[in-house]
Image (spheres, rainbow, N blue to C red):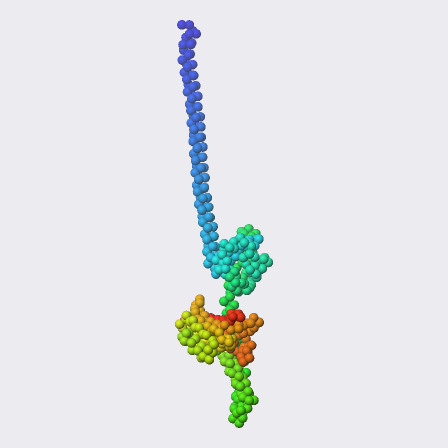
Length: 405
């Protein structure tokens, strides 16, 4: 074996061993790098999953917060809707072009229109004057009263306010009209003023009536003495007749002026109507009478009510000089007793309708002008109201009285 062969024989295994060690080291390095890469990839995947988990959690929290916000918004809307539906005042909202965007049930009831009819329509198409005129001015109204005729022709007194409607940023987006039916309040105010007026007038009138009554009695006494001496004197008979008329006027005057004292008692209304009507129409065979009483009894002052009935019946009879139909009815309406006296007479002309309850106002030759004034006085003392409707075919006087318990 030559030296070269000897070297090859000894060196080749060594070379192979070194090569093996090198390959093994490289493989270990590569394996370590692969493991590091796997660890990095695993860490990256784990971080990705962690981020995804956090995002999902945040998404769930956002969904929950959104759900809470939506529920709160829905609750706030429902709360506002419930308020609008519950308040007795009418509420109407308009956009900047004055088209109706909201109308609550109270407004629909007062105006006699439905929400479907009103939504999206112009203010002038839904509201009549003067309400539409006030909105058209686009000016804030703190408090105002107006007489308004609704879609059914009912006249109402309304107390109203008009305000600008703004969004959350403060920008004006329209107007809101709030109003209430104050018709009953105005009626009570009128009654109170009437009571005060009647009280003052009564105190003044009572003194005047007493001053007239005394000399009238003296004059009447002298006339009776003169008639005994000259019983056939037409002049004395005329004077006596005129004095009797004056005496009747003074008695009516004193009745009107006398301070009213109300004594409540249970009254058989049908019986009261019958006993009041029959004596007054007994001599008028040309007048047909009808009684429709659907009220058994009423707690009231019998004297004041009967006095009012007498004057209304007399008024009806005098309005039918050639005969006709006289109808008296009674029924209950909204907790009140409604009493009506109707005739088929010549009616009350338009030019005097505002004066019929004025003391001493009359168009009759023999009237004192106190009959209807006494009716109004007595009904007012009973906390009631009296009004009338009249045409060429007749007149109906309507008394409304409270039902006391």
